[in-house]
Length: 190
Image: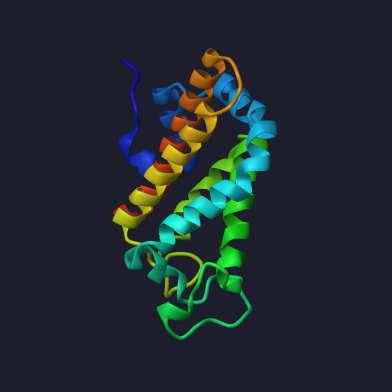
């Protein structure tokens, strides 16, 4: 039985990520599968991003979090939620960030910098990083991650590739999104 330093899981990001990847069986084959999906996924990123934002727009509980000024956004911010449409420049700014995130997942090196990046993605949705006015409730983050996972799985299952390649891709991305979800949830625990 392997001994795990449980307090270290909370204080050492690299140790935590290594434990999670080992426990889930996320390894080089999964990373190769994810990177191998890049040519198929890249053309669909705008469609996936639009689908995510269309879903977020359907609920005030999710859309209201886009009303405060987003970190890094310099343009005009609307005064009320009714004025924040999916075409608003601040939403276009956020869409670019989601597209860059998805691109990095399929092209980036899975090294210490990627682990830090995935952790920042979790932290930035709280008031611990970025805008102090933004704190997305965990239930909304879980809803978003569930939607993204389903949209990604549906996209992969629609590819014209052999069935075993679809299975590998769905499994690899599922593990990756669970890793990301852990690096979101951990910022809500403290």
